[in-house]
Structures are given as structure tokens and as C-alpha cells.
Length: 501
Image (cartoon, rainbow, N blue to C red; front, side, top):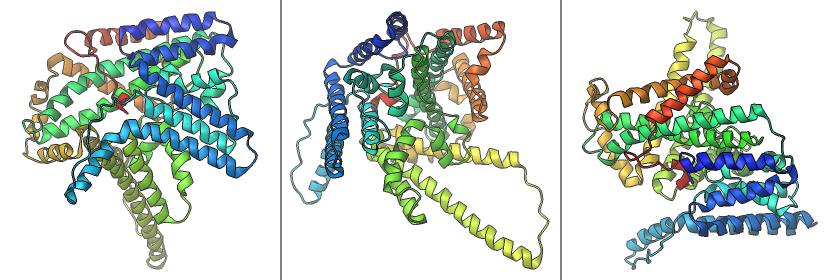
């Protein structure tokens, strides 16, 4: 069941109405039932994997808490981690592993291993596995208690708004809230509904419409070389942001209606002035997970500059592999790590230069310098970061390393920059008024994100305005979705991009 379908628009109000009609102590059972029903709409068989992950981590957590010896606890913890990662690895990486093995065998002229693996990747397995393992690590560290109620813990792993694409919640946030159901709140309902509406706008009006242009160019990059590819890559940066941000916003809104607060997963990332800042604002729940459960255990910032850079590269390489079983994803992750190492090195060199420049100024006297425009510097840093991140997205979108290199070659083939201004972009599947609506919607997105970047809660600001402004804004958003959203006979209902991970 997708968020951007009529089924979900019917499903959510029914869940909410029954949820508030039930006694507080029994609400989590209703949410558990509806969460499993929600997940089973894709493939009922794979609900067994969700249950297995839940069962293993629950009993491992309880068992670890009962053990007194550190060695036994560590052994139990390691076995459970390896089993869950083994299940994830089998379903997600078995084909990738076989292809690598066959390449190695071809070098020594040995026959290939059979590739007859008809395995469909279970929706959301990467997300709920990391969430369950995060809980297990917290219990092992003593940061949280081992949940005694199996059904409540099962809801923590399977809570339907964030089950298939995050945010990857921490047990100290979501599990604690599920133990303390909140009474009905009109403020939560109206703000949650607003978030759901805005999330649908991001997905259906911006992401799915930009996808038409991106698919047109990327599927025929030889026909659309040069600046066509460059423009499509920039539009993909917008597409993937609005697709994933839209999902997270709908998830937060759906949960908020029931008085459950999920973490903010995006915080105006394209206003970042460095790639490091970008990853503090993009997919915050995953970045935080890798920081706390991988980067810090590897040593984090301890052990000197070189070890810190090694840890950064290792984490981003693993992040790329987590996103997909392809060398293109691995390179995408590694490239983002290289960006950060380069920024860190440049900052270190600048610090050294400033230190020695200060010594020379004491000897020769301080030079009078022209004042530098902070606005122009800030704008340059933001644009530089956006272009670097967008370039990396090319490898993410391409669908394979060889295909990525082919698209990259086509991007540097031909000097047709005039297509950016002569209306040629209107001939890539999104024409006339629809392109104008897309561009206007992107401007609205960046206006909203600007306020978020400045630390303002835009939803709260909107709801504090006069009733006429609120009604006008909601009606405009609703009519834009109905008139210009991608659905119906002309468009396939677009699955969210991150469902494949």
C-alpha cells in the first residue's frame, strides 16, 4: 500500500478513528494489527521475515539482560547481529556476490556459478533491520531496557508509517512513546494532516513530474547528450529529495495524528554550505545510525587525522553498499566520503596557512584587506555543495557502474548549453503549463526550506496565521495535487524511490 494511493487515504482515517475509540492500553494491539496488514499488501509471505527479525532481536534483548557475564552477553549479541545481517545479506546481496564471484572465476578460466536466484527484495528490510539492530545495540550498551511486552516491541519494529522507508527510529524515542499513548489532540491532528498534504505535494507534484523528465534523458542519454544530461541530473537531485522527503513527511504526519512523534529526517539539505553539513541534514536517521553504531565504534574522531579520514571513507562506503547491491552505489558512497575528506584536508591546510600568516603579520605588520561579501561567499558555498552532491547522484540514478560511465561520457559530449534557455527542456515529457507548475513548485519548496534552514517550524508558522490564509493555502495545495499530481491513466502510480532499499 503506497502513501500516494486512494487506499491509503481511506486506510489512515479508519486506523485513526478506531485508535482513539479504543482504551489507551489496547491501542498498541490495534496499531500492530494494522501495521502487519499494511505490510502484507506488498507480499504476504515476506511478513515472515519481519516477524523473524522481531522475534530474534526481542528474545536476544531479553536474554542479554538476564545474563551476568560480559562474555556470554557479548556472544549472544554477536550471534544475533550476524544472523540478522546474514538474512539481510542473503536477500539483498546474493546476486551481487555471485556476479563478483563469477568475474573472479573468469580470470582463472573457471566456469561460472549458476545465477538462478529468483529473489524479490522484501520491501523495507534494510530499514526495519537497522531499527531492530539499533535497539539491540542500545540494550547491549545499557542505554535502554529490554522491552518485556513482545507485542509492543513488535509494533516498534513494524509501525506502519515508517516501516518501509524510515525514518529509522531509536528505541529511546519510539518505543518509549508506544508505552505511553497520548490522548486525542486537535493540534496534533491538524498539524499532522497538514504534513500529510505537504508530503503528497512533494511526491506527486514535484518528484513524480520531475521523474518524467529525468527518465526521458537517462534512458536515451545518447540522444540527449551534453547539457540535457546535466539538467536531468539536477532535476534528479530535486526528484529524489522530494520523493524521500515527501515519504518522511507523510510518515511524520500520519504518526503525529495519533500523538506519536517521529524524528525529522530532512532539514533543508540543499542549503548546506559543505558536504559534511549536507549529510547532517539529509536522511538524518540513517546518518545518525551510522555515526553512533559504526563511525564511533571504529574510533570516530579519536586517533589522529588519518584515522578519522579512514573512518569517514569506511562509513560512507558501507552506506553506499547499504543503499544497493551495485558498484555504482558503492562508488556513490565513496565519492561522498572523498568529498568530506577533501573538505577536511582543505580546512586543515587553511588552518595551517592562517597560523603561519599570523606569524608573518606580526613581523611585517598587518595588511589592510578589502571587506569580503559574506552573502556572495555563502551563496558560492551553497551552489558548490549542491553541484557536488548532484554530480554524485548521477551514479546513484544510473542503475549500474557501466551505465553511469556511459551517461557521464554523454554529459561531456557536445556544447549545447543553449538548450537551457531556448525551451528545449519543455520537450522532455513535461511540456508547457506542467513544466511551469513544476518550476513554481520547486520555488515554493526552496522558500519553505529556507525558513527551515533558519530554524523555523514552517507548519507551526502556517497554522498561526489567520483562518482565511490557512484555508486559502490548504485549498491551493489540495487543488495543485488534484490538478497537477501524477496519477490516473496517463501515469503509473510511482513507487517511492527508497522502497527498493
